[in-house]
Length: 200
Ligand code: HEC
Image 1 (cartoon, protein in one colour):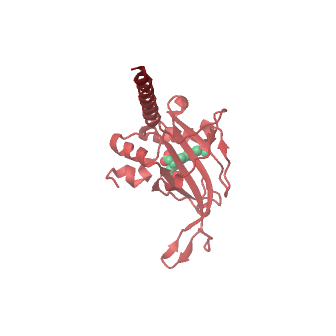
Image 2 (cartoon, rainbow, N blue to C red):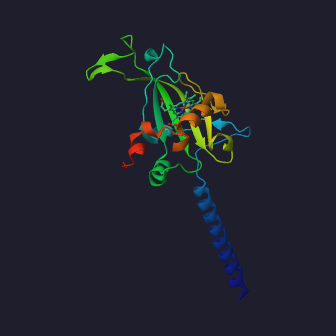
């Protein structure tokens, strides 16, 4: 008889650990974030973001900004799909949302306004990657700045910095607080997918 008892204990143990494993997985999912902070609270450079949902590309060419735009020049904005979906449903971003704005230069200008002519017409075309700014929604870490932390990994060609300390309010958050506090600190008005809420 107690040769079966041993077996039973084994089965019960296995079932128990399976249960624990599953509950761990569920809690990891509900707190999902790709933001990774080191021991000093610095954010690690996000990876894989060029495969996220591309929501818009504001453009501030240097040549139209006295030769030196604050954010040169294209701003490619990426958000993970599950966070876009949540925004479309609820009108705000979930805890842990990471938004990446990657800059690229305009491609070799031939006119003083920074433009060039291609078979499609005169205009602006993407040149080299030129920097990355990131916002992270975390209401505990960033309660002082409307629940969002601001980070820059440099405005220059690759490679970017590997980690970034939180930027000051004067450098970043202040302008977002002054202008877009009502739309979850994000410039929704420039991203048709989020602005018009008509889905994909
Ligand atoms: C003077 C105002 C101003 C300052 C300062 C500023 N931003 Fe922004 N930010 C904007 C505007 C306007 C946009 C959207 C249009 C654009 O990109 O040109 C934007 C967009 C963004 C986006 C894309 C998501 C969104 O909110 O729409 C990120 C990420 C971002 N900024 C991060 C930063 C970081 C990091 C800093 C500091 C290094 C910073 N910003 C400083 C005005 C500002």
